[in-house]
Amino acid sequence: MSAFEQPEPFVDTECAAKFLAIERRQLLVMARSGAIPAYPASLGSRRKQWRFRLSELSAAITKGLKKSVSQNGNRRG
Image (cartoon, rainbow, N blue to C red; front, top):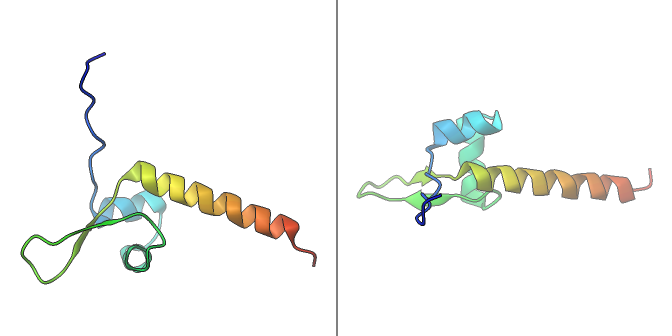
């Protein structure tokens, strides 16, 4: 093992949307609303270009699913 670990690379919206198996537009809505971890990268253009880390997306979705399951389990129907 080396003393220096490579940081996890950022991915673009196309890769993140494929990873989550959702449409790119849905991913952007979630990023803008703060529902998922995302990093805006304005590189001199008027439009924001979003970047994501797949491990953070996975953790956010897993956490959301666990929360959803526990809420549904506590409901009485």
